[in-house]
Amino acid sequence: MKNTQSLKLNKDFRRAYRSDNFVGGYTVVYAKKNRYSFNRLGLTVGKSVGKAVARNRLKRLMRESYRLMEGDIKTGYDFIIVARNRAVGKSQPQIQRDIDYALKHLDLKM
Image (cartoon, rainbow, N blue to C red; front, side, top):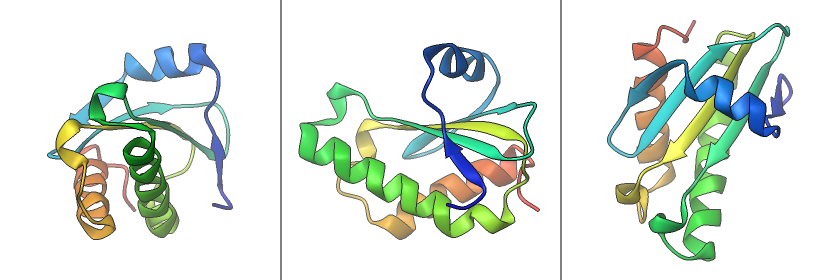
């Protein structure tokens, strides 16, 4: 991901959680304007989703979905993508479609 950095600080996550969001079938996408010329991405998968193997797989699928759409996403935003319980066992195209729909709804796709 060449135009995206990782979102790591708790204060940045809390700030983004108080912003616009869209609840999809498999994910919840939060987006908050930042003061940078690049995007920052944070991924969250709670323990209720499953064991570590399932959680890490979902994070990989969400990261890859974002990477494939990165060129079409507006810059200057903090994104948090939260996996829902029903995302377990879904394929990468299904996750990507869900994130894509959320970004279109939030008007963040070019």
